[in-house]
Length: 305
Image 1 (cartoon, one colour):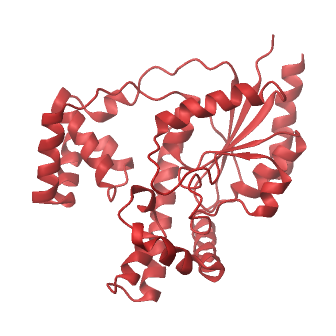
Image 2 (cartoon, helix red, strand yellow; image 1 turned 180 degrees about the vertical axis):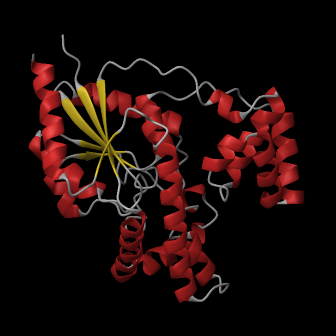
Image 3 (cartoon, rainbow, N blue to C red; image 1 turned 135 degrees about the horizontal axis):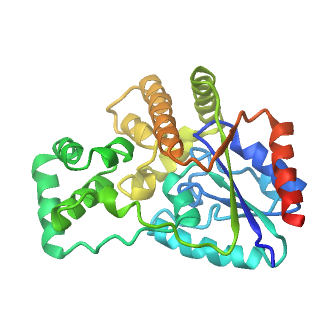
């Protein structure tokens, strides 16, 4: 019996995944699973570029706007829930689209979450005390020494991820990276990865324009609505962190907007660094739709033999 296929459409923020994913899903009369860790939250639609009501009406979407800002959620939960949803969707269609730019969420579905040791209370308490006493910058410098590979890809402003990596380093005497490269789990479906990329200047211009459009669509008002909950991890996100600094009175609004653009560009570089390590990805320019559809049709024909 032939395995069904998961089409994974990935790429950096602002590259143009949304419209192409809709076209592919429509061509194969199938559904879209979001692999964006922030589009899960219902209250931050503008800043996460969540699919619009019109786009949601075109194609069934899953894992979009399903969580409250206070809900705890992890890549491990995402892996479990997506695999369950895929089992259900593959009964109706032998092709499903998964699209997004959250690297760990994509890896969770395609490769599986690594079996990382549980941190003991003593180590956790030690690292929390060090964070409070020494600050994040000092811990980042230590991570650079202990695990330079993870240092290159982790969000250095996300103190929870930095602390967790150091906890593992201290507790096991091994790098956090060594636990993140375990054997890939077997999946009951084929995985076809399509990567989208643009020249850096082109991508950066799109990112800058997208931020301007978000501001016009009401990003500041959205940030103001969720401002009372700014300490939540769900809001430790580009677009909101910068506007919170404006709402705090720390930054002027034009400076905050420029920082959103800058931090979005930095994030896009981190995404590409991560994706480029995966040799199974076939890369296209997002506007090469004819070539992309040919590539998919060839795969379908091969499966039918």
